[in-house]
Length: 384
Image 1 (spheres, helix red, strand yellow):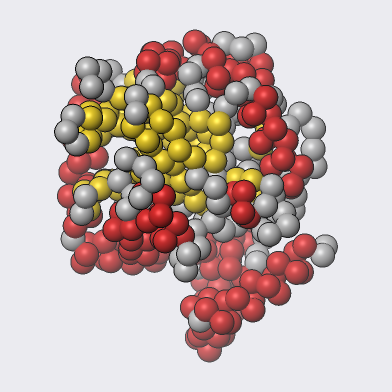
Image 2 (image 1 turned 135 degrees about the vertical axis):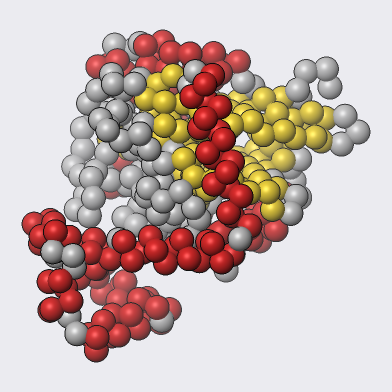
């Protein structure tokens, strides 16, 4: 092969108030700046579309924000060189089945391939195989379960079924030369993998994936080489608006996969740091900042092989987030959550005894109890 194959994997993309005017006027150059040639020159550019696409619709009732974009978003992405979109994320069903179905239809109308969501669970689990210069590249996408997943009768996102989907990965690998898995999961703003996330991603590699990249965390994470493959624990944002005094939100990584086929397939993975500027558009970081960011990235990544570090860092992170997560679990409103955080979790500690917390722990931890409580809560929230 005289010229190698280049695939670009971008992270989360969603129009926001600062970039919506640029999307509406079709100005891809002003949105992507010097990222644009990277997208256009690749043989295939893939991203995660972190919203539903429909001009009008009713948002579902859920915790967290509901995100949508107009169809001109897809027209701009297509002009920018985006060929494929993963729809397996926690916002694809923010506007119900209508939003999912309209997004699928609009992507098709704009000649953008999709994977990771469908009109039902079977469709959502379909992989996508793209052949470039005789090399078959497979794509799979999974999202963690929130208010987003497909069912046997409802449209939505694909979720990772630990009893079946590792076999799905193995079967797909037998039909392709290179397999990429996009996993929309992990904890927001946490740069390391949780012990469970690391276990899942390593299992994906062991099952046949060559590259697993985690999105959703809204910050640049870490990476590790495991067996024959590579895992990226957090690409950060690609295009998600600018947030003042939030450097983690305003940066991300593009992944450039270069495939050389001689007697066998050789692969190199390059990390391209990008940043969001105050008007919401993005740029490739300049050389000094790029070198500094990558040095930090690779230094942090050295910890991924240290199981003790991963466990200790996770415990510390969870302890720090206790005052936020406990009120979430117990269903308190925003005012109470803020007050509880200001008081160092004292309100929760006063109202909830260790006996009550042990009961909550058992419900969350035990798979049987967990299934029961999820069903009860889903029924109650769906029947409002």
